[in-house]
Length: 388
Image (tube, rainbow, N blue to C red; front, side, top):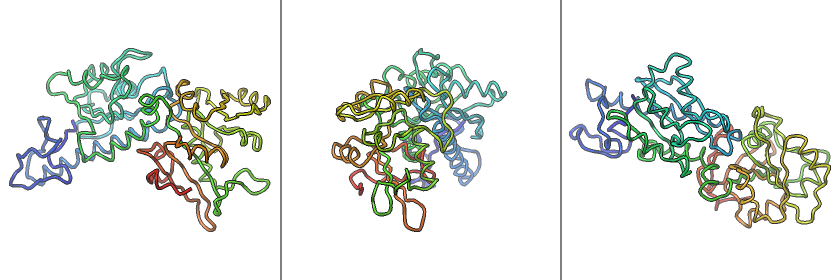
């Protein structure tokens, strides 16, 4: 089992006061928190425990991120199962709506591979569900398993699916539930879970999708490609843009982009999700100029097409269609209007440079799911520092 240790980083751990309650690590009294032996051995053991939790959550987050864009209207969720020594046994994620949730799938894999009896700890990026929908409650699956400790990355903002933490806390004595938010040492891991959940949480709490703007510019700041070309960015930037498309449930664009470029909005530079639900395209078109031929082509390619005459209504329109994450691919006119109205959550600014690789900047109002899209991870700048 992986338990919280007493010597959390940044806290008083002087040897003369080992029994002092230091912070959230000590609120739960459990057996086996310390390894036997010297103080240095105990410290080494507790550090190893924390590293096991951190590594397990990173594995769960990375696995869940592979299915961003495939699970809507459900959230992307990952689960990692550890043995008593903190070794990873199984890492799984929710694949798509109607299929097993991450926890249930991880336990299934553990049974399938014969390691279920070695499972001691479950790390899950989102509170296990506690209701019967298309699948049974994950809280009951965990209660009925050998899992002793459950670590939860984020509470579920959906009141229908929530309640899993409370249910798990009714487990017999000796089985525990830990919330990342209660442990400052895991603040960065908690931010990762918040970033993964951001699209779903935004739809549930704010009744609108998470909106990402993707803007590509040349080294002079122009968004207009040279004559005869549709792009001026590098292959690496194209792959990032297509990973973002794959992760998105909807694309917002303008009629000007349709008329000038006749875009396909498909995923080409990275593998697409198999059997994913049709992606939604919303075209801002106040004057009914959308060509029927383009609409029919997109529908034939597996898209759903909607037209909006009011930019302000798009957020609620997308939420009504179960969209968690929408991206904007449009020209300078529509981007300027979105920026003026503040209708965005994060902004990916891709700019070419004269002699080196493209520069990628992310501006965000909070933990951003773009951290799972960019090769180097997203190091977001505050939204009010946006310089585009």
